[in-house]
Length: 316
Image (cartoon, rainbow, N blue to C red; front, side):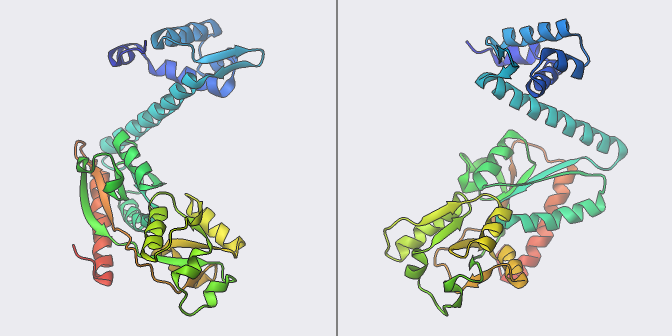
């Protein structure tokens, strides 16, 4: 039977978690003990205590040494997350005590990263000692990180969360999309291709939202066949694929696509999507107090959003 939360909180110690990470890295009690500066018998006792607390073995013993089992890999993963949180705690304490610095973790989807970077640069100019973490992921992935407390704010879409009402939603940010391809793709030279021509192509799509948009575009065009798609969750990988493969199309946010087209790395296909891409919102948890750095980030982001709103005529 799994231990209760009270048992875990009262019996698990940070030094034990350090030992688990060392065991996973070294695969040896002897080497792990050296790494955390305890004796080998002490390391053996500590591992036995952890496994006793959790009620199950965490490592498989073999001639090759120790190897984490499924439960062990799970515990080690959370041990690393706890270590990261403690490191962030230390950074923020130092920042508060010295009157500057601290830690800021923000996330955004592919199309939102450019807006995040603009705001982050302004915050860093004011607080050069700030410890920063910028994460690109899907809206679903970012909301999970937000719920877990791994990031302070996220620029994404709240409707991908389990409970959208859990978040403060601030400031719409537009994300128009362009259809792009390798400059050698035959549709680049077509003046006004229809969607039937595009539907025959292979598509590179960012996970979750863009595949849904393609499906809706198929429905709007009266087509029932599924799109041939390649899901890639890395902006760099999408651009690299487009540069090397002249037989695929991709949907890219206008901010990213415009720069790549100007450099000649990709070309725009002259087709305007009928399916509207929902705007982003800056989200943070209602049940958590924001750090001073996160509040300042929101102010800088808001200034960027207002500039974009003036250019794009996006309503507040």
